[in-house]
Image (cartoon, rainbow, N blue to C red):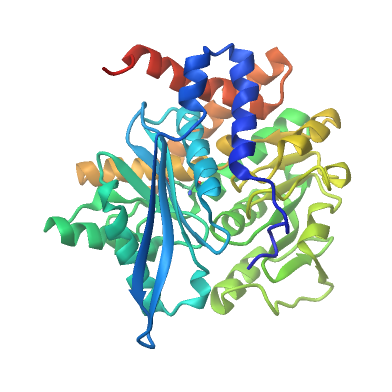
Length: 423
Ligand code: GLU
């Protein structure tokens, strides 16, 4: 489970704060405003027992952090992973605030997590752990105040259990309490692929900008979970050649291109790509995959993958961050100097939360849209956000990440200023 994570990873929250500071300096943000936005507003830590299938009791630790709720209800996923800790959840919550502000949807930023390897639990244990965690964080969550969604290690089924648990507490069905639900229980068409779709749209726009023909581009995708697999599938459908993908079992490389639909089917049947075979396929490590010769690299796994240790050796011209926090600030500097065009996480992977917003709106109105309508609206928001960020990056000669932060942080700061400080 830890193959994507470096032994001694940099603290993601310290990284999130560094990224914020760069924008705060350029915006010349008032010191008080800086202090408000630099730290999460609320943090809940829960420790809760679950009866395991063998009758023993195991105590789990989980978190729900609200970074900022000035622009609307707190929004962000729930992660199940053994490396979850409070600083990771803080960073992810802060990134959600900027992400929602950047694409201009009316949400604040939140994130949750449980320290667990979900693959080690039976279905029954996973359900019980999820329901108990949902009860513990029900202090915070609700359609009008905090709306969780899937993240690493969670999926639509987990969301259905959370929705059901909160609905049981209230005595009626509350569809809008989570997003990323199965279609059968008020999920939204297009949500499954939404993050990958956003990644593929921003990859296409980035290619256009650097003068790279998308249908001649070679693409490498790190991670084959919800984001990585949908990104790979949509990117190859759009005509680019996906030459390598990876998951926890390692990386799979074919210079002439991979059969992504076949790999998707294999991964669904076998729960990972472990053992996947095809003629001419080369097996590599995740570290080797990142350094492959390609036009576009899509890190879609975890944080801290592209660091000062490997940034010099990255050969891609474009990096599209499907994951949250895959590139450290030190690597950002190296890559900017080398002319690598990075579409930052808060822009590249914002398609997920954007369609989450559509799902929430549909749930509140109990009126559902067609997949076409969803994809069209998503496309419009992604292209508009990309172009807005690109324009600032070009005008101010700053990396796209900084430009994205300038837009997002300013939106949150302006809203805070207009609302004023209570009391
Ligand atoms: N976990 C996803 C993210 O990091 C989606 C969050 C959401 O839809 O609320 O953006």
